[in-house]
Length: 182
Image 1 (cartoon, rainbow, N blue to C red):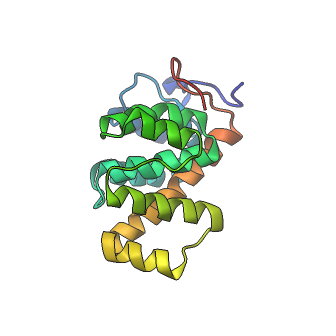
Image 2: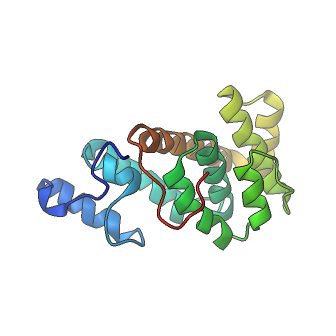
């Protein structure tokens, strides 16, 4: 059971929150504000920059949406963030990941990736999640393959979705209906 209203009522928000509410819904394919931004809207000074980061990764990432979705799937699986998994599993499929790859991530197993960059992002994210840092070898390999900006994006996206997972789990936000839970 969620610890906060499942859906945000726009008419109960301050004018700034109403503006943010409307902005958030413009970039999301749903009619009501739910999920992490349904929580974060209660603190606009956090919600607004968090949304800018999410939108950066969605639309302007140097890595591209495929590797960003892989990063997100790995982080939200690690966090067992049901809502984020339910939103991003379809995105991962749209980005070309097979159901077998997604099922391996769900089972906390290393998928048989089709591309070297996917294997590298997997290594970076799983090492970050396990040790909260990167070994010199992983750092150097990732920087050489992804470039400095790409490496910063993977690390930053991992941190952002770690935060989102904590918000979702702390407020018991359930997955979207009709999605197989973790």
